[in-house]
Length: 123
Image (cartoon, rainbow, N blue to C red; front, side, top):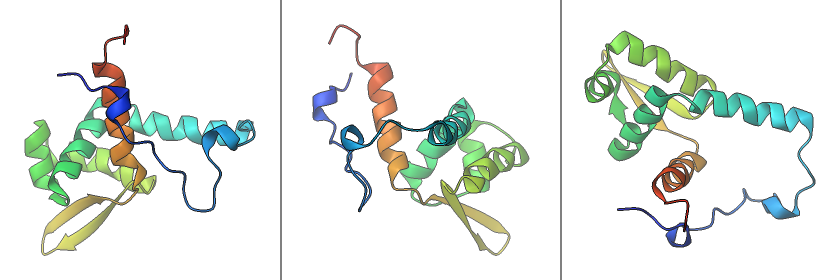
C-alpha cells in the first residue's frame, strides 16, 4: 500500500530556526555538510539498521546483526558511522552494546524517504 504525501505530517523546524522556505539559500559549507550526511544515510545496510532500531527503540548489536543477516562485526562497523554522525548512541550493559536513535529527525526522514519510493510518480 503506498503512502500519500498529504498524510505525512509536516516536519517542524528545530526550535529557533526558520522554516526551510524562509531560509536564505544554503551556502557551500552547508551543502557540503548535507552531502556528507546523505552519504552516511545513502547506504542500504545503514538504512535497514536505522529502521530496525526505530522499530525496537533500543536494540542490541547482536540482534541487529541477526535482523539484517550480517556478522556482528560488520554491523558494528556500519553502526559506528551512525554514532560518529550523532544519529545513534550506544549504551553498554554487561557484554552487550545497545543502539538507539538520538536524532529526532531520522524517523521522519525514513518515513519521507519511503514515501518518495513507494508513491507512484503520477500522484
